[in-house]
Image (tube, rainbow, N blue to C red; front, side):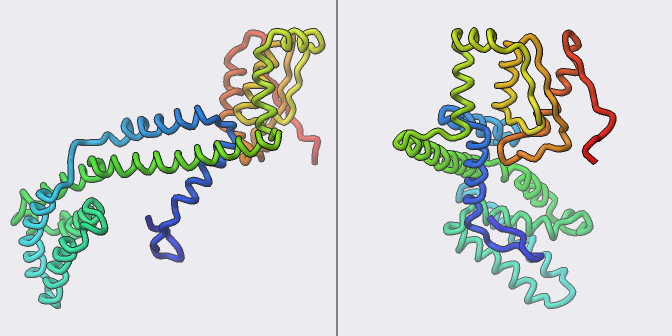
Length: 288
């Protein structure tokens, strides 16, 4: 993996640490359980299958040999067409073929093959008509390979293995964090929300709430996480009336899982369902 820094791409082997940090952060922000993490892991791979559309291409040594065989005459033609430094041009291209054969095993066949196809594509642009005239089948072959290679079996296995690895680390973190709290009899903010939602499924709790409260008032609604929306929605079902107050433009609790798209979807739902609902906007701002 590379990272764009100061106008250039540099090697960035620790990219996975940032992605793991994001995954762990979302796990906490959205109160995701261990069971849900496992489900999301499987769903992530299913989503990739539907979006990318993996094919049955397998990069084998036979395929690599075919690629090299087709590359040599193309590179020789490019070198012959070069106006300056003809020998250097030819040497650079043919050395790149030798480098492929030498380093493909260590760097990964798919990775090296992909770089070669990009090299061919850079020379076989539509403006280079002589290549299309001399090597029509080869140019078509490489164009087809360029389309299929990113979705080949090896790439699929690599990405799915990465997904499994990154999720296994997040699941391990989640388990250790829950163990840490249990051993010390601790509850965090998310535990309070999760446990309160569980209480709302108990008849005696529901009866007690309904006997004491008739109206639910939700203030700063724009800063609600998905679990908070679920909580307040459940409480509203128990009330004779509920009032939700918020301004989507003032949402600042992204680090706690709030999502403006979620909030907007709730607002849109209230607007559509006219029965018993009333939507109103303040026309003036009294803060300034």
